[in-house]
Length: 242
Image 1 (tube, one colour):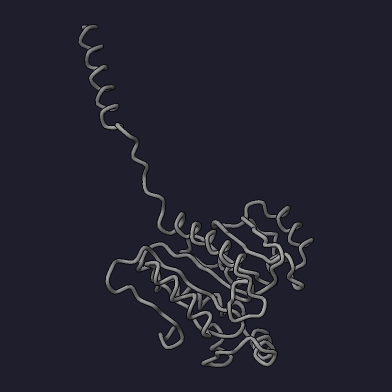
Image 2: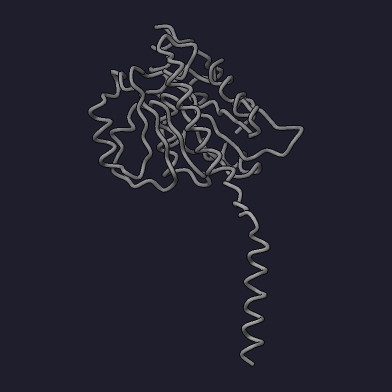
């Protein structure tokens, strides 16, 4: 995949902690998705946002008004799902040079992140925000750790169906946010809800830290002295027994 079709933020001064592939909404790699990608990069990750609508129309960068949402919906319907997953796979192949790779998606990208978890190789975890279609795709057990965020007031993803999804897929970590709707994470949307966005981000960051960076081993206080005491005691017992 040509690098012109991606928004890539390299880490130049320090080695990256790992990589994050950011999957767009149906509006292209617009200002919001670039800002999300830049924010992950600022935390020390190699962050890449592939442009997944290029097979239908290149350079898509739509707004959140009625016209933008309408065009985005039309473009999504023309995209071949298998091809998009292949493009995500190609992006992961590039990203894995930085270490373990997480995929994080929003809206349409939230669904693609969920689908990629079982279809794309080389992912450490998948995280999806208000992905339409996810709650209908509950049959397969997840192959990698999966985290999902939903708004409880999302008219496109009814809370009752979300509850049923939780029952079907206990292997998925699902969080819902009271009063929030689709787009609650996007400060360019009228549905933006700062409390929900911040809570979801903290969970997302913790998830990435755990599965991409990995928790460092815990050093117990005086563990070295304790271990040495056990060795000395064993030698003493062996000596007295001889």
